[in-house]
Length: 128
Image 1 (cartoon, rainbow, N blue to C red):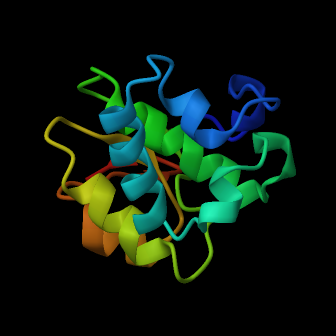
Image 2: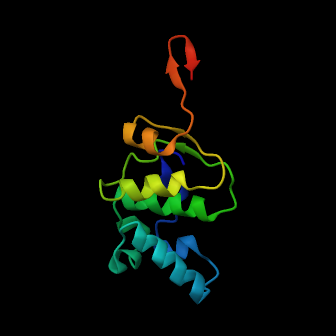
Image 3: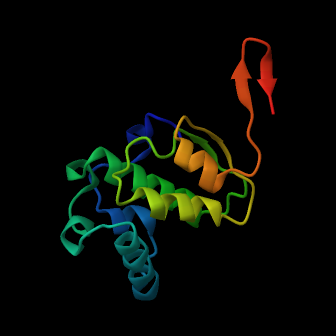
């Protein structure tokens, strides 16, 4: 998940459309449930992505990644644009990811709650 995540989004579609291109009603309902758990309102789910806040856009991309078949997401400052209300949900979602997660973060709460192994970049290189 790059910091310039907006370049990976189709800003003209609604979040549900971006997350599911099948049009299947049960999949769309599940996606709406996921978005709701990430603090999206029903109204926000029906706006084009371009009208959403930076944090909401980031959550759409993060959810897209978590719904994909990827088993090792690489996240660059994944909590950078999230509101304090979304933070606990995002941390829980990433911590419960079944594969490995590689991330770069300065967010101490994220590091404490999500990471099982940390490395610090120092003048001497990476240190565990």
